[in-house]
Length: 358
Image (cartoon, rainbow, N blue to C red; front, top):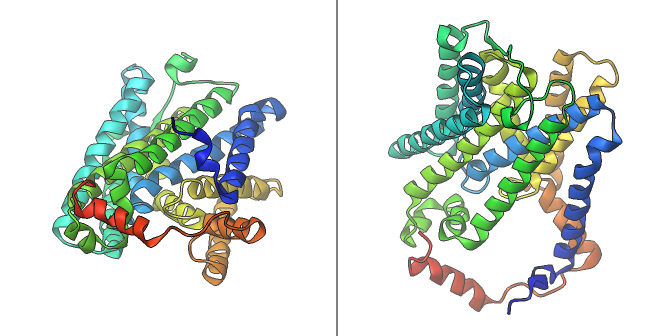
């Protein structure tokens, strides 16, 4: 019988397990410790973490520097605005519709870009162009509220309707639930499936990955579909929370840059990095507001903070916050075991050559 504690066989893993357990316990009791306005701040922090993490699936694990996630975020928001607010479709159904549309769009975008053989920088430019076009369509199409947007005027409340008017605890716990489930799901996908294990190889060198039998184009498209589909959930949640959707609120370049930069700062390709960065950015914004800083200036100061953190990372470690954390823990507690032997590395590459990772 497999020992479940085998994953705690190094000091780093034990420390991380303690930190994650403590963080999750604090997150569960947080709404009982703070006044309602601060619960809303907690919801925004979790939403930022969710956005960063879902972007990280394609951007971090596969290396697709995509700004098309702006479209996914906006699709989630407009799906609930059009289907639920205008046509009284249940909000959960609208959420699923947004996920499916965003996933299909992500799949097609990845396939289209792969046909041109573009590198990561041109992928970013191409997906940025798509996002700008989507914002232009939303701003001029009456069906999506044109420049005025769409406002919520319903009265139904509760988990079944994904809506809470006075107490934001419902939004907080719903977002926390999505974040935990998606994080565990992606961790399992990356560890236990051939598809998940192939993604880092594609990120490092698509040509070599293809020579090992990995279906690079297909797996990139599937990763983008999964990433954009899950990103739309954050758009649906924020739409229900603020109760108004317009192209200016959910289809701005700033949103896409925030997802990308937040993930990179936290540690692209790591599980915890994008989450830590998202929560940290939300805390920073709330800290600035405590000094009576206007909303417009909060955004400006946050961008300045991005620049400062990026410069520090360039100086001390380009991998992001989480690799620095791991290096610090190893320096204090030691590695706990020797690096993997060469035969183990050869066995992992052998799995690719044999075609067991598709």
